[in-house]
Image 1 (cartoon, rainbow, N blue to C red):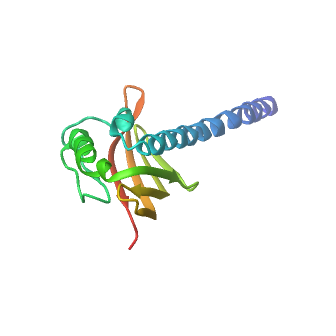
Image 2: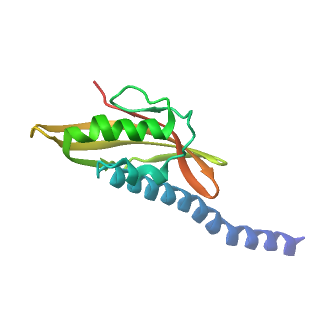
Image 3: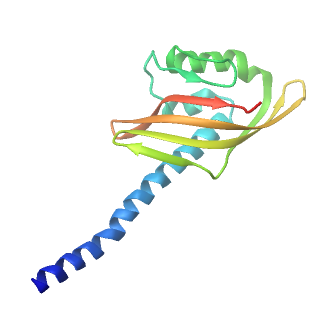
Length: 154
């Protein structure tokens, strides 16, 4: 019995660091996805962000402007290219270091705050802090955005 307890203790002690590492890596994966997301959108070209999004036609995305995209990624990308990007000469989106990841199987929720610094085509600067919630789904081994909500406090 004593040997069995010692064996159980040794196995448990050996496995705990590996379990903790797996959890840490999951958060690091999402931190990397968040960095890729903010880098891509900072180019003002949604084609650079496209690989991060699921392409279902009925997905809904909430952005600061316009209020809602309900026609999936295609509508989101096309509207941004035609209505938003042409109004800016530069855009820098910087995620804060407050990313929180909640994961349940193949679905994950990330929340964070960010800073936007932009220059409009007429030279007017635009600066604000915002909030960002993203719902991810793992499809074919890849995490894809299936919903997001971006907001700016009043």
